[in-house]
Length: 414
Image: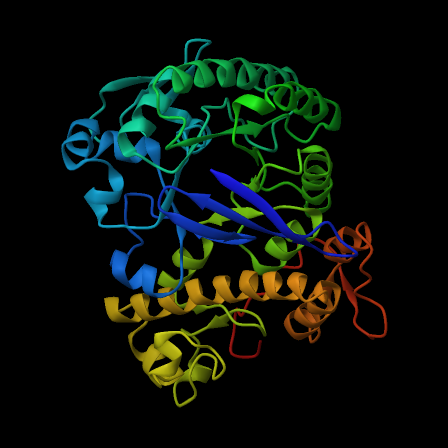
């Protein structure tokens, strides 16, 4: 990996970086769409690449179960298997310790899974996780960490944090002896739940190992915790992580969350949100989500967004047509998926441009006013951005909204 910081915001901790990996250059900050099984649902790799996406995520746990390592080895890795010519990041399987917890038993050796497909037991150790990711051939690979729900409290959080550090050491040893360090880049994952003292202990340990890892992820969040606690934890980690390594916030996909994370110093994020929500008929726009299932779109001949450069919008496909087919015909889900991926890329691309041009605070104010000005600013966003010198309330008369403040269209009256 060649990693270079090329611009910094004069107010916030946002930055633009150039990350060169084995399959090309990815400019940061960026959003990574999730191709769990080796594909973005409904899209070909060529379609995804044509949208300007240069880095996406595969799931280690699922690819290990199906198609399996033997097939991936015969194919020459996941890039060739799925026909993807750009960069790949693989998670380690750690998240499945939470999402598939009823199938999992955690020991110091690793995680014993029961396959949800055939009931067969599978032991995923740190060494095995790294070996699987070597077979996948991802440009960025993640350590196996002991993940607990972000709402978990008590001694289990302490146990998981310390075990994640021990497992990192085992991942490092496995990776270094493989001879693949020049092709694949290992990231550490900071754990510690919502407890600042545990996060600091984990940061101390992982920063000590800086010379043996290529980057850092902030894990264990986006699991239902209060947004104020979420941003406190992101800020604590981003403030301390080395400036000459990429910083990756795992499981972040809402536009407001992405921009807060960027302002706090995060470079990368991933989430299933934009693609999954597309399959439910919701298009993402700079005015907020658009629920195309609602009856008010029945006769609208407008595109989702007349300013959007995506193929769905530039083709002239109307909201009425999408309302007619979305959630019924696969073409509808594909069309909205394409749009949503381009929306995420525009949010992050516009952030990069604004940082480079020295106007990132202005971009934040403009984005939040257009997105939330008609309903109210989430108070946590206001507080988070104030912590890095940007006051969204300056010069505007917009109410504050308690809680997450997530914007959504639930009815035609919305």
